[in-house]
Image (cartoon, rainbow, N blue to C red; front, side, top):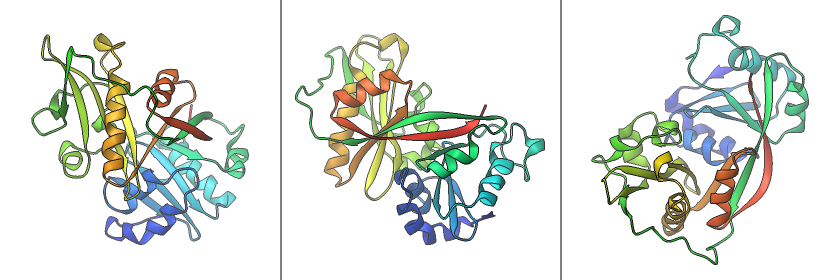
Length: 259
């Protein structure tokens, strides 16, 4: 597969729109909103987002899947056909039975499930902010305080990129002034915004994830876009948050990655 120059990424917007497993992550790359790579193999296009999420659009052939295995899914850099950042994940997310069958049973491969959601509307019980916390918009002044695994640095290359093209909210403890939770745009397209949420362990069980996710949904809708949500099937916490703010599951995709 041939890597496409970033200056040509916008030529692949329609390919991104045709990704059936997900559109917001491929579109964020094609529009130049977020970092990632695009590879083409003739009538097939691979989108590899900075977060590590990868999606395929077009006619996928066995030789393309074999090349993807050698280039991205091998267990170490010595097995890869070209040098890549060894710390960067590669998780191929797909709804294709053909791709799933091709990799099933393959050496070094693990397959998990990922639940995708659409927004079903404002919930009956609207989340409210615990009075012990204060809400802030993410800015250059507070982005450096954000801590955790699912934060802007998960899917944005740097703070400047996020502050220029992304948005989000944090909750801060009024008692000690510390960062408590964040909800942010994990991926952005002209039509959709995927939401990421993280709560610091010391401040869990205060409903912060639900409240911040709800605020994100309202902001996204005000922008004229659709909120979207997804998580690993085993992530029951994320599932609970999604359902509490009005999301509805629509499909389960497969996540193919190295063991």
